Image (cartoon, rainbow, N blue to C red; front, side, top):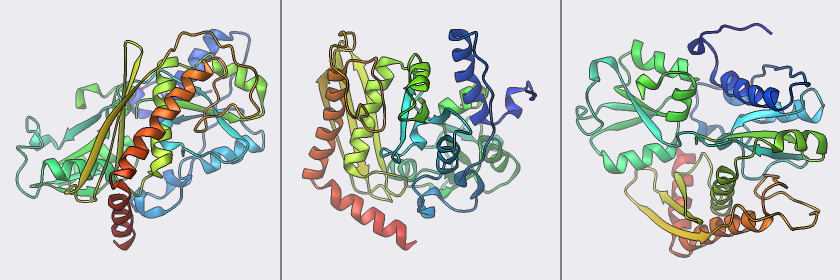
Length: 330
């Protein structure tokens, strides 16, 4: 397998895949791993905002087709790209340890040293996320926010070489994986496999990071219950401390003027021994993790559902419905 050794010249997807393969090779030195490069609909449609395309499997459909045809045995994704409801026959067989989950602001060279607060009036900030735009519009009303698409190389080139954007918002984890920390999951990687392929499930299950897994189950359960996706500004964050899982979730209007945010917590025992029998459907929010205590997974899922229900009972549905209508109209 050939490739450019310079990390900046590699696509982020390849770097993420290489990192997972490197761990598997160290654990299974007798196995051979072949990496197959593929493109998805989301990679090809770069002139339209993600929230406008309308396709729920933008970054997964072609990869799942290859899985279904046994052309590949596992697929590495940024977990945020995987819908909270997977098509029948597929599951997330591993959730890897989360890296930096935060957003990063990258400024045009002429604005180095500035902050979002000190950017000039009407400065344009690029982001592919409605959630980021809504949150930042609320905090920095003097700025304008515009969709920007493409891989990290493309977005940084648009920022540096043209005068359209004063700054862009990116995932810090992606910049770090590309080796561009000097310009600074989300942060978590998920490995998708065939749901009934027990050999591959066993192979990748060693990649599960228990804390990241439980945090992601809570987050995905929250998003699923709210029916949150690329077309609405929804955010969720988790933290684990002293056996307590803290979940904060919020919804925003498109312009950030209306918002709702709440936090809940639950006791989660990560280290308990697995004493449950086999399940007909072991998946929770698309994730299969037989080597992690089932009760801990269910507690995490219930936390996500409970927080979403709390927000819905307080009127979050109205905010989301208006956001969807406005997004569809523009």
